[in-house]
Image 1 (cartoon, rainbow, N blue to C red):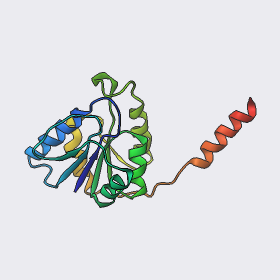
Image 2: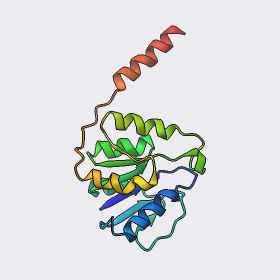
Image 3: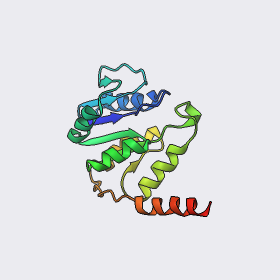
Image 4: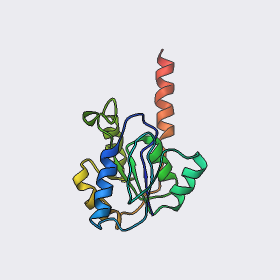
Length: 159
């Protein structure tokens, strides 16, 4: 099963769902697809779509999926990593009105460079990203909280 999560952003991300729908129609995706769409309004005969579920239900869906395709939200990515899932992250882009800025590009880039996720920066590459996920080795997530806390403490101490 493929789980698609779009988070809770108040802007639509139907661009991703249209591409997934196309890949299902083209038989590139043959698995069942479940979508947590948040506030994105999209209708499809190919996917099971719901807006929001409880954190416990979402946790269960992530636990049971074979592949997580998500927007570039840090919470969605970290939750997938916590479950040891293969993740394709597609950043929301401001030029399409999907977000206020392009910080998701930087998040996806960072997680990708660390080897945790498969980035998908262009919708026409989603098919090849899904294909790449077949041989992708999931890397156990190692938190950088220690360095982050040290950085904040150093800043506070300097004030």
